[in-house]
Length: 489
Image 1 (tube, rainbow, N blue to C red):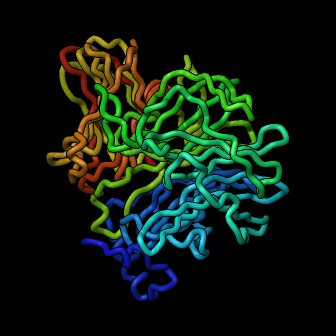
Image 2 (image 1 turned 180 degrees about the vertical axis):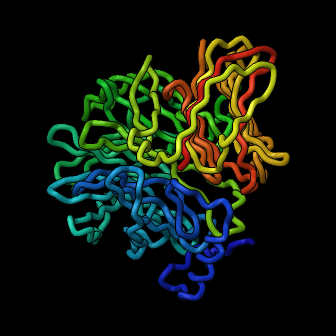
């Protein structure tokens, strides 16, 4: 179905209850609805926004177009949780109902101040010639959950030297000042980030461009996020327009980070290392992080990508968010681990110890469509070892360690209904290890893999038949010792 501009920019208030009911009915019949991931009730979900801890709860918003699986008029949808695992849908948090956000409430962040949760976002507008004019906007939520919106933008123009691709404010506090970083595109069509400063969250002054060593690195940097972790300054962002390089940058758009010295703001000099991709799978973009009361840095990403058609489109919805991940630093790189609260999801447990040799092995009662699985391969006297998930008639998803070439491989060539094939069906990354541990979270239409306690992460959507629920372990050209523990979800 081709969506017209008028259809994409209808407001949900203009749609009849009958139409919304019918759309929800179609969505609910989809066999690929997730079991334990945040997903939209209808329509399209994308970037996580405003991820915060406030008033004793985790609050998370996301980009939402409610009327179909396309990028249309964006709202902020609000969900919250006390434990990062059980999420309560609250409803629309921010509506595109003012002159400064008339064509969408785009991405942004949240920060607690004076016992309120302040929310910052980009207001998208278009004129009669469909030319974009972005505004940076502010709202706030009180302890009763009521959200109010500032009557005027807090930043009403794009500074000289940048195009109208100017969005996604992330705000934090350092000493007695607030700082805002915004994703931008220079007039020469290269990506960067710029910084603003404020004393009160209402009045902002432009400091300039963050001085990185990435002068010609894609054409737009989306969803920037700066934070300090273990004495380091970390800049996460999603650069668009990177060309594939070997096994890197294989998706349509990438997400990653650079680690360097802590920013000495208001100085904009930033000494940092090389850019690393956050996730080596197929479907991960626009992550956002927050610091919780215990000091953990927690990140959630969009399990999807722009400009890709997904099989759930035919069922009136698209995309979900990843499980929350705790970040730490090891050897100059970010580690990602599932937050410990995920153990609250665990139900029936099954454990095996075995030697796998020259072939595949499955085990009684070791199958399913929604579960957590930890499998460890030791004594790697084989050319490759791994696990095949969601196995069924002609279907399987393979995660393996290529012992000879020292690579982690994620193969969804036979994972079910194909999609995004122009970008390939295999992802791999270099990985040197004497033993390998795969920590997997398998849902009805996704797999998240954490390798060796978070040294690598691989996130992917898959769309298998409901009956494809087998799990098989394998070793090729030799043998390996296996320990596996599985919990139903």
